[in-house]
Structure formats: C-alpha cells, structure tokens
Image 1 (tube, one colour):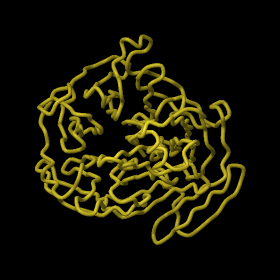
Image 2 (image 1 turned 180 degrees about the vertical axis):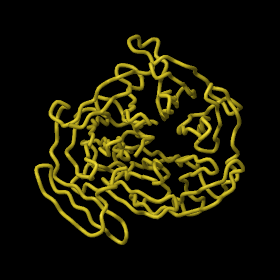
Image 3 (image 1 turned 90 degrees about the horizontal axis):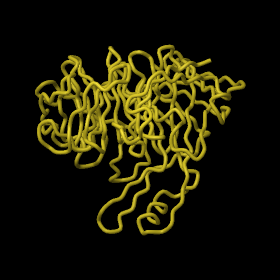
Image 4 (image 1 turned 135 degrees about the horizontal axis):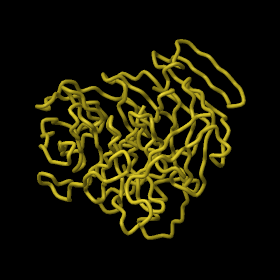
Length: 387
C-alpha cells in the first residue's frame, strides 16, 4: 500500500456503542462529541479536540515488539515498497512489495519464512501488486495488474492458480476488499458512468451475484479513478474520504449505516488533476485512513496533508511543467474511545507519516502493524496501550 495512493489495508468495531437512535451532544475537555441518526444513518461528529506534539503528551503508548525485514543493515533490506500486509492466526506476517513485484512471509519472531514472485504476467509473476487477503483455507489472494488479475498462492509461497476476473464484465479495475468461503467482494467503477459499485461474485467461478451502487461522497470530479481507503471488517465495508474528514460504513449489501466526521478539519484536499497532452496526471496531496480498531474498541484514524497546497490542480500543473514546487507534509493519528469520542490528535509536522510508521492493519492478535521507510523499509509490530 503506497501511502500516496491510499491503501491502508486496515482494519476495524468503531461506532458500535455510540451509534444510538436519536441525538445527543456532550462537551468536555476533549471537545464536542455528538451522536445522531440521520435518515437511518448513525452519525458521530467530533470537534475541537486537543493536539499533542509528541507521544509523551498523549494518552497512548506504542510498544515496539518486532520488526520484519532487516533491522540494522540497509544494504540487506528485503522490502522496498509495502503496499499491503496480512497476518494469520499464528502471527505469520505476509507483506506485498509493490515496486519489487514480490510477496514475503515472515515468522512471528521476524525471521524470513519465504519470498516469492517477480515482475511479469505469467504464473507466479506479479505486476505492481496492491492488495493481499487471506482466504478461509489459508491461501493468499493477491490482486495486481490494476485489479485485472487475482492470483492464489499457498501458505508456503507456491503459486496455485490465477482467477479469471474477466467475468466481472462492465467494470473497471476491481479492487478486492473481502474474501469469504463462497464469494468475493470488489469495489469497482462501471465502464459507462464511472459510478462506484460493490460487486459480489461467487467462488470459484466468479459469477456476479450482486451489483450494488455505493453512494459515498467524494469531490465528484468526472473521470477520477482513485479509490479512497477501503476495508471490509465484521460485515461492514468502510470507506474514508479524500477531500474531507468523513469515514462511512456500509453493509455488505451496500446500504450506508454509519459515519464519523470531523467538520473542524479543513486540511484535506481532493486529488490534483492535470491533462496537458492527453495523458491524465493525478497526484494526491492528502489522505485519510479508515479506523484501525483494537480489541477493546479503541481506535486510530491516520491522515496526512500538505499545509502548502491550496489548489491541487495548480500545484500539479506547476510540477509537471517543471516549475519549482516545494511542499511539506504533516501527519496525524486521531485517538478514539470505543464510544466514538475523540480523545485528541497526535501530530507530526514536516512528516508524511507518524513516527511509528504508516499504520497498515490490526492483526488477529490485537497488535498494530505499520510500514516505514526510515531509516530503511520494514514492517513493525506494536502493542498499543490506550491510557
């Protein structure tokens, strides 16, 4: 999951105890916390929360337990560009390396179990893999070639088969979001109107079972094809906006049921778009993750943005045309109680990711797995304590 193309394959039972029928507002030291039901959608709104400049100031502690990839010698680095992470019940960590077109498996103690794959389109080859899911039987599903290919690998790193997604007709570059014993779920856009759909297909024949429009709100720009953060957890499909602070939860049937908002945050922007010569350029200057939820219901939502960019289109135009464009980024983790109350924001200035790395997933062991490039690419496992 490339941070600039927004894939925090992450993970997620926020909203549960706070999504009550009716409306209520509470104000305290942490800011304003409001819950209400709007047209059957449970909405949580938080504003005016404190901002902490360091972990020492925040009611959270990250305990580093293990690193995956080389620990101290950059020349021996195994990873290059982590695009997706999955963890099984034994603690085995599977990592997709997008730029190296490989998949790696690490034991829970950080030792390398196996590495496989190379660039190509044949059996056992990958082409810019983006999404990794664990199948019910322990096999891996790897999406690559812009979603047009989904490969099945076994837990020992052996290629099993390529699924034919050509039967998902009428849709562009499907993004794999969940795998169940007898069906797969994709978020995709239709070829005609560029509307988003949740498409569910049967396994193993990949015949369409349902096609449900997903009416989440983006900037609404025609032709834009960048998908926001998306994950499917405990029967709920979560999508995070890119141009405003809003995370929406849908049922597996595509019905919107939940939303968490921070209307006081105005830093998020849509993508910059520039098409000077018939080749559309798209660049992201801010992003928002879905909630990463821990066993006690506490959660984190990550974001980054550029305080230097007001007009993404103009900024991209200047960069493509060779003008000097000097921009910085800030990163943040927002801390939530199980009730949905926002405790506050942990913020890093002049950084595109938190010090603990880019949050990727909460594993079945309740640990946080993050990816970092500093000082060299690796995946980290943290025990997270809310205090």
